[in-house]
Amino acid sequence: MSKKPQEKLDEETLALLAWCAEVETHLVAAGATAAEAQEHIEEQAEWYTDQFFDGLTPEEAAKAALA
Image 1: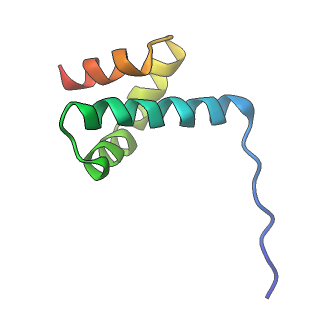
Image 2: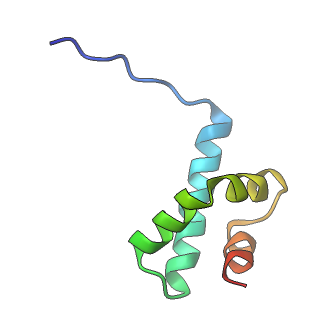
């Protein structure tokens, strides 16, 4: 059985993933469970990606999502 080569992520993608992880912590701090926060971010991935590229902080994005 051969192993599949791991795909390397570019720096921008890694930055977006780190940003989303921080958004998750803000959503959890606001009362969501970690699973709920992760699911919400996954379901709204395009919206969160736009917020990232628009320059919102993770805290601002979480507040906007909760509004």
